[in-house]
Structures are given as structure tokens and as C-alpha cells.
Image (cartoon, rainbow, N blue to C red):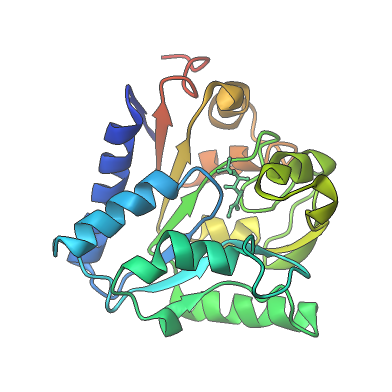
Length: 242
Ligand code: F6R
């Protein structure tokens, strides 16, 4: 694992964006696995800037998002589709027909999961971007005694609903289920970029990156991948051994 620690968020975002931009410059039809949540917002702003200045084009890029809530109305401001459009896709030259987010309102959720897996298998992710939950989840693969390899419907843990309640007017509005890519699909990506910010994630960063590999900390499975780059702010890195 290549672990980099940054003094400022600005530097972290610039390096993260330059890694994504270099990939897309080298391979204009790259397939990107994307994430939502607060973690990637600064990276997305930097990618928008690089795109608008003409340094990188996403015209031929395809993207697949990690997850989506089940049952939120499609026009709800907190669907991950809305998030991706407003935080990134609306501001860059990507063809939105080439951007995929699981459909959390599909009439048959199991069929939707299977369809998503078939697309992922055919596409092959060049890079998967990840954040991490306080409990060590990646995408919505929650800690458990076993993990799913493929896309599946997951019951969100109460701590995850609590953590995400900040985006909703009350905890009751936070969906209790989501569709998520499985860890198998994530680990198949040629490269993985994990970004973590903030002191409240320092303990889980230590457990994920330097603790035992266990399904109780899904992010610890990243230790088995040959090409992971981790970008941390200094707060998130504070418990790591040098
Ligand atoms: C988002 C996702 C989640 C988040 C994680 C951290 O698509 O799959 O795993 O990356 O919950 O969320 P933030 O960035 O809001 O702290």
C-alpha cells in the first residue's frame, strides 16, 4: 500500500485529482468507480477545475458508482444519482449516458444487482475511489462475519444511518437499505484510491490499514490488493505507525 499523508486538504485534493487525471489522460476511455459522501467532494471540485481549464477530458470515460439508497424518490436531493450529478457530472464533459449508479427504485432489486454485476464484469474498473465508514465499511459493505462478493441489497447498520442523518432533515428519513457493490467487485479494480479525512476516522484507519484482515473491518481487505493508494489528512493518519 502506498500511504500518503497531507498537511492540507488542498494538497490532498490536488494530488488525488492529478492521479485520476493522469489515468484519464493516459487512457481516455478509462472506467472509473466513483463514491459519494463528504470525502470525495474536494477531489470532484478539483477535477471540475481541471476539466474546465481543458487539462483533462471525461468525454470517453465510463463511471460506475459504488452504491445507492433503496426507496428514495428519484428526485430526492440525497439520492446518490443526484449527488453525482450536482457534485460532478453536471460540471464536466462526461456523457451522462456513460455514468451508472445502481437503481434503488428498481421493481426487482435482485435483478438490478445482477444487471449491475454484469455491467461491471464487462467494463472492468481501471480505478475505484473509496471513502471509509466509521465502522470500517467500504461502499455499504457493513462489518459482518461474512461479506458479499457481488452487488447486493444491504441492511444499513444503525451507526451508518446515524452518520448519514446529517444529510437529511431527520434520522427517520434515512433509508434503512441500500444497493451496494460487493467487496469482490471492488477488489477486482486495477487500482484503488482510498481517501480519508478527519480525526474521528483515525482509529478505523489504523485498524483497516495496519490491523488484522477481517470481515469485521471490511476496509482491511484492501490490504490484500496489490495496487492501493491511500490519501490521508494528518488527522486521519495520526494513529498509524510510521
Ligand atoms: C459512499 C460510500 C461510503 C462512504 C463512507 C464515508 O458512496 O460508499 O462507503 O464512502 O460512508 O462517508 P463520508 O465520506 O460521508 O464520511
